[in-house]
Image (cartoon, rainbow, N blue to C red; front, side, top):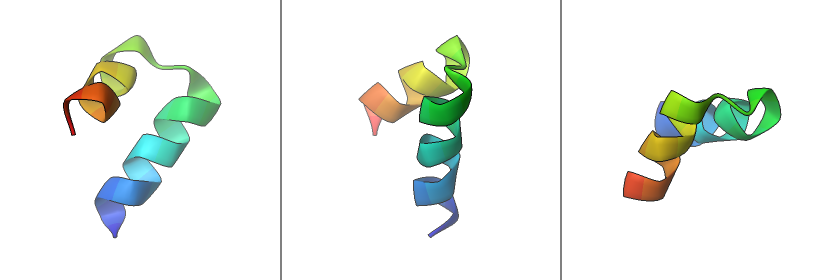
Length: 25
């Protein structure tokens, strides 16, 4: 579940690194 929140936070913050993680997942 934490992964989901990590991706969601990435979307909200527009963090490029986290965004890459989101695409990889």
